[in-house]
Length: 95
Image 1: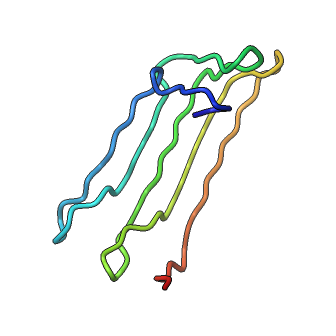
Image 2 (image 1 turned 45 degrees about the vertical axis):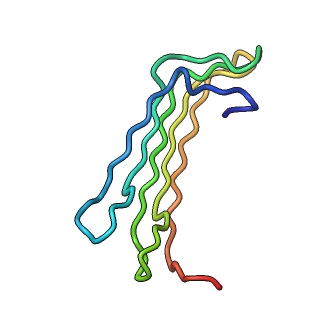
């Protein structure tokens, strides 16, 4: 969803499942645009890609370790690009 618009028809997703341990888990999830998408009348997404990586904590629960996204497009006739990378560390069980 981008600004309350479902863009999934113009995207593809892929997951990598780690099966080396006792319990399989999603190690990486990636979503990529397949064609440019108009969002309402004021914006157009030319290309986007997001990737989230996970690892298992000692208790066997998956936690995110990295999120990266890259998007290019235009809004109100101005071209632009946004890239973000977030790294998660110091995971602790709560409760």
